[in-house]
Amino acid sequence: MSDSQGPGAEPLSRLMGATVSRRGLVKGAAAVTAALAFPGGATAGATGLQRLPGSNADRVALARGLVSDLVIRWGDPLFLDAPGLDARAAARGALLEARPGVAARQYGYNNDAVHFFPLDGGRVRGLLCVNHEYTNEELFLPGLEGLETLEPARIEAYVRRHPQVVSLSLAMHGVSVLLVERDLRGRWRHVPGSRWARRITGASPCEITGPARGHPLLRTGADPAGVMVLGTLNNCAGGQTPWGTYLTAEENVDKYFGGAGALERADPALREAHRRMPPKPASEHGWEHVEARFDLAREPAEMLRFGWVVEIDPLDPSAVPKKRTALGRCKHECAATALTKNGRLAVYSGDDDRFEYLYKFVTADPVHPTKREANRDLLDRGTLYVARFDADGSGRWLPLVHGNGPLTPGNGFASQGDVVLRLRAAADLVGATPMDRPEDVAPDAATGRVYVSLTNNVNRQPVSTRGTWNGRELDLGPDAANPRGPNPFGHVIEIEEGGGDCGALAFRWSLLLEAGPDGGPSPLGSPDNLALDGEGNLWIVTDGKQPGGHHNGCFVVPTHGPERGRPRQVMSAPAGAEVCGCSFTPDFTTLFLAIQHPGEGGTLETPRSSWPDGPGHVPRPSLIALRREDGEPLG
Image (cartoon, rainbow, N blue to C red; front, side, top):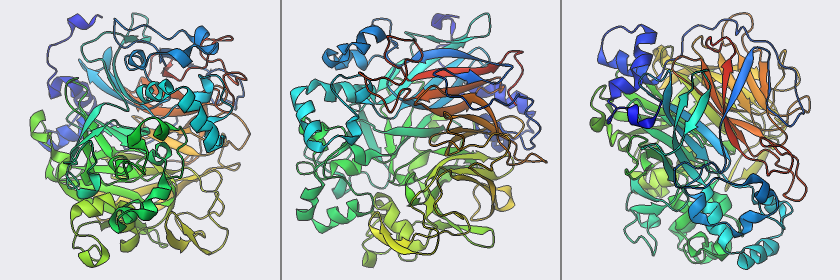
């Protein structure tokens, strides 16, 4: 199906109407909106999929009965006038002389979050929004032996000798918006040159909105008003809204800035703003030696303009992305959404760092179920909360509101802008529970159950131990919600929101699974991105050490019944890769997965992987579509 056959303007009801009919909804605006955004079922059954043994092959390995489509690879053109990456020439070092403008019109590097926006019901086509988290320059540029472990002086020398690589890497970051469709054999493919095709990069203008807009600590020489930022960086997981926009989460933004020593001479308020998310003396990519805005000695506030949730409209390629500061600044892993009982939107986000927190934002106003424009700035007003997990299995969402409790001028919070800008410090003061790297969140608005992946924490101590971490003192030992010290394999928590309402302030919690060698028929390690299928099974992809020493993979975990919490592996990644994404089509017949950093741990000269193109080609992060051979829904 060509792009020219599609409608000129996709109304909200048409974009996501297939989900409405599938759920068999009761009438009512709130119920309709809930189904548009949250199709997960309430009961879990057997997955019906065969178990895949762990794999160490340099390929995508699948359980029997599954097939995968290679949808798009790093460097494939999004636009008809853009050339594609020559992966064989890249393996010979050709990208050292590549033009950044070309990369900005190609599918970016290290795809992470994937979210599907159905068109015409979504059975045959839809838009994908895909994050591009970071770049492994050592895998595609010559002369680098593990860039992230090199001495700062060597990084500096390299980028000064080849300054063009900074613009090249910036162009590979950000977000891709692309059209995909099924062919006559049911396989998913990318359709280049659609009217929705778009690249947002590390240099694209983004507007600052919400309570931190114009904050003095967000003003720079290039932007004295503090309202516009160039780029979005380290985009990890994400989310999507009922009105059809994409939420992309900025995570490890500290890796891009150098010159932390200059902050010792900075204004005390600026130093305090950086304290709980501290920058580094030298960045991991060396950009500060070429672009002044990444040097804190020259632009000490620039780093504070990253670490936000960014809203993007995939239906309007001209719309400026908006950094929604009401959701706070941290290392956002995700921005997972669910509707409350009264029709407001809850946005869950984990701060992916050791001993950091789980957050929830609830909009002040309800979602309008039919008027898309009425929801345009809904995420600028609402209440931000942080989670406290109590030992008796109960929990509270603690409000992070200026003037409430300790968040007063006497403690350095003069406005809500201060609260969201210094989110971690605010959460410290109200008594939130430090967690083992809270990553993705999968809420089910139909049941009020919310699943949270805690990837790992090797720095969690075996017994109660006072210590410092990221600019504050705390107990580094285990607690009820983080029971293992150290925790090399992570765990998954199930939250039951009070009254089954994702807007509730009280909840109950329990451990769904503790990852590691004893984790069931297919033990997993380092759970990362999550998704719920139509039967309520939790799909988990991994990023880190696996108990059996195998590659990362995709696992299915029932949330109810006798197999509750027992994972079954159904897919394994190529060498060096993690698996990201985890986004279903509305009919649950397809799961989109992002294969990130294949070959990581090697270099261009000594590669670990040549996936997906084979020997003699540079490894390419790529997007795949997972399906059943019989065409039935997954799960």
